[in-house]
Length: 576
Image 1 (cartoon, rainbow, N blue to C red):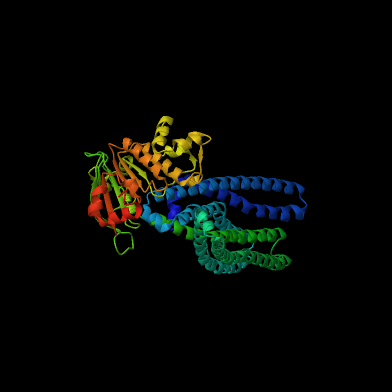
Image 2: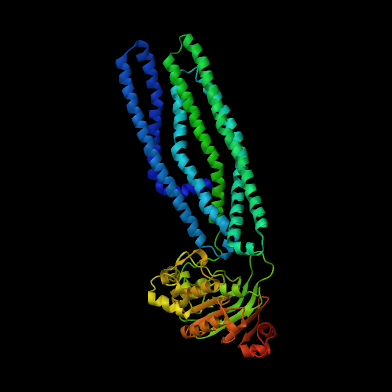
């Protein structure tokens, strides 16, 4: 998967990659030239006492060094820019693909894993590319050039290279082969730590309410220890690489001095040539060490690429139509025709044979016991899921044939789990209508019974809202979410248990205000509280995923035993 990702995301940067390769080539050639110039200074200038020759060759060495430094800096600059651009593009690609996921795919991966894959896994690939441009491009050039130059200095002594390099390669291969499984475990353990930490931060109130801090501390400690142990295991193998390379390098230097000294004594080699040869040996082994560093990064980057590839390979279960319908002959109508829905892996459907219509100017309420499928039913309308059987029609068209933007532009949704984004009251309301004026926002807040507490905030509409809306109460979050849906004045309103955090008086005032705004629209309310929906034009009663009654409050009390049980459990006989 890693080569595929690199080919795809590095393709737009061929010019920058070419610049890196050219400047690395020139810089490496310059580095390989310096030992030969130094050898000439020793063998010709120093031995003969020719100061002028030493100064001339020293000037050339300064010029070559300047070329080397300039080329290296330029190559690193373009390499770093390309690596950072790849990371940016890859994160953007993952983000865009995840946005296409339905709730099914999001549940499959989980938020902690998606976060890790988008940040840490991308960073591993980005680091590999950066090190490739700064080290790996140079390593083969230096290795081949070093071998050529060392043979040029002394062919007999170059036989040492044929022994040293294979020994070093075998050592590196053995170490890296033990590192790959560890890197795979490392990323999995990192996912686990993120998941546990996210759960604990999100559920800190529950943890404290049930005095479970010791248990959660132990749970996090266990996950943290697992990550630490795997990191230590991988770190031990990583720590063995550089000492091994240094050992081979030092042994090689001793061998060169030993055999080179005999050659000098026999008159077959000059001192400057041996000095240059020793430098070339170090350069060759350094290039192998650079390649070793890449071998350390490659396994982890390959694991990360596989994890990112899993995201790209996951096809969204909710696929937008190729030529989605944007114009409708009917308006303000939702219809369910023999709808069935089964969650992946479930034996039985959560919804079965659901057939009813929600009409303009009417409020349709859906009620039932916990687990009856109420929220699932509502989520089929905006295509958070797709029905596994039957069809859901909006404005007379199957939702699977409607352009997603056209579908969502007709819907005002207040989900069961209200979420506010970090920002201000105004920025959250403008999620519903980006160009909303202050007057429109205050009007929506007044209908949602939220104007009073927003006016009481220090900065009114510009008051800060923390991530998730944790700096306001549950009832305030619900009312802000309702205002966010109201401000766009949609044709269809979907309220998924959106009044549960409100007291009875606020609930009643809000429903009266809503009635004036939504009198021409289609409204579907999912609720647990009978008082919220008893005035609805049509009440749909669900039990075990099927409809057991449809009608008004009064009619269902006479004809539907399930509804009557719900009413009896909540209201007094006088209200009934």
